[in-house]
Image (cartoon, rainbow, N blue to C red):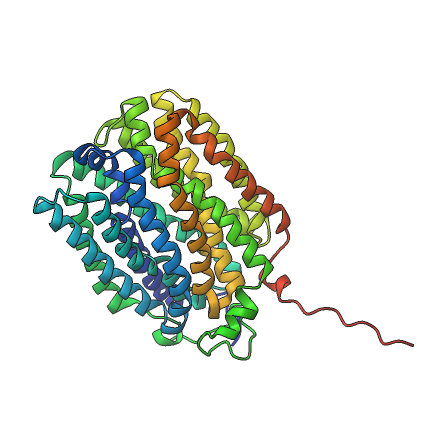
Length: 439
């Protein structure tokens, strides 16, 4: 299998029609996940919940997601990315529909327990999203192209935030609030049909020859066999590079969800900026623009400035997070609205670079979903702490501690990237040099 870095126009067009519908699907997944975030103040006000109670709902979902991706990663590697995204889409659409219909019907009792359960089940199906995209696209991209794919992956995520926060804010301003669950359900269902028609797991399934992607499993003799426990134990779960990336993504998860879960009530309570207003639109649209800029910038820097090394870019972005979080915590209303998006440049640049790109590099085409699931899983373990725990501290100490509690995790992530500064999949799999024979 040669490495055709000069892909034909036909190949690039067909590859577009593979990742683009997957990207749109993932964007609708976010619309059906972060609808909880955009409606947070509305739900807390409507049902008289404090931040710790609302955070409990979020934590139930985050931790279910974290455990699910660890299990569903190897499953997705076995069944393929296409089947995985369809399972996730159908389940997520059904759960959002159920939640919306229950609120439409006047549900009023045991909201914390009931929503924790329903949101948790929804997050189980959501967990198929990122790993299925990474799995389906790994055979289509050479390792030297994956910085660009990391940018694409970040654009997918950012488009999801536009749907979740921008469109979600518009829904809350013009319709009954439970429509923020019903409309995403329909969008996800439509994309499931599109994926069933267009998505292929490998170039060969679409009529093109497979090729050597030069990733961590590209030269394995059993690369075409389904992933098994021996591969996971020897090549994934004991790999010091992947373990270090996982710890870094734990830090990313705390910063990312610590910002995304609480910036809506922060803007409302501290700066009196509510969904549907001009400054809220600046913040929500800024999440999308910031995420796109960060993802594309990270991908470009990685491939063009650092020879396809991901850690140097992640290090710079972690340090930028610290600066922006400090400014956000001290800002006046207008600047605070803009700083949400500016901070997201550095947060989503790191997330796309590690989960979307490094997972393919070091997991290889064979184990891409497993590694993506592992990185995404530990990220959501940290995300769970931003729910009940961070909510508890915000209830107790107020918004003055918010960004200060996020910054140490950015610092830890930066220090971890120093350790991985020179790592690439080619270097990681290079054989040990032979010792010269004794004279």
